[in-house]
Image 1: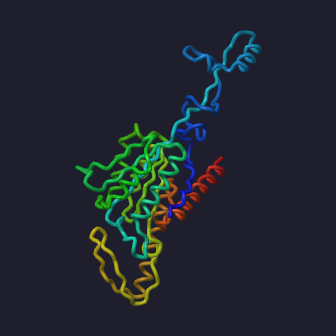
Image 2: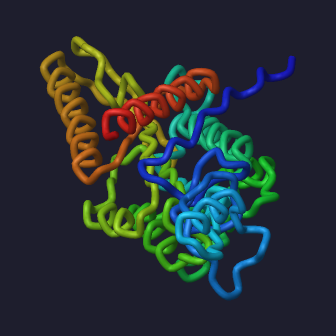
Image 3: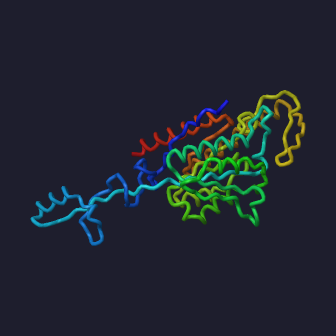
Length: 312
């Protein structure tokens, strides 16, 4: 049975960015495009094809002499989109056969949603992580944004079952991208996919924001065991050790389970508050089902649209 097609979500920017083809979004710079930015008088070097003959005739009549008016338009470019994936050991939990969230499957579905939506918007897609043998002397695995990037290239990388990235690999990834400004101009989308159980320092987010990227943290956490915790009454709970796959049985009382639930919910609440406090729009994913993930991204895009309308 073939998989149902993915529902693409719009790349709704926080501010005007380098636009995508055919005027779906506009850039701040002038250039070839379909949306008018303004008019000015003709100057040396301007192509004759840019002259607005009707406006020129009206202005010449008003001034009593020949005046030529050039119409400027906003430039149109493809958006740049990069997926930065956290590949720490904790991101390897859990095996698909267990009744909990499989983070590798969720991350793959999240990345696929982003790539499919970016390509549908005629965007240029890139990918970055710090896992595996490619990480020689701290070098990441890096696929630069390309207009002809294929979906399978990212899928092939995500199929690699190596989760040995350092604890600070998200920070390292943001720092690495900051050195690639030619590949990531202002307005580029950077989707950071992680459980954020080891979150970057707020300074890292602020530095990345200062580059005027559109950064979107995608929080991948199990809704039962990480976003919250079940009510248990003196039962033995198997806990998996990240990186080793070893399962340890831990006996928990009802009071301990309540304390763990309160701590997990408070941790997620602080994370969301901190991210929103530095001007980011995070979304939380607790499923590996592609249709559910598509729904989360569509809801995120709609909230952004509403925010832009209120800001007008």
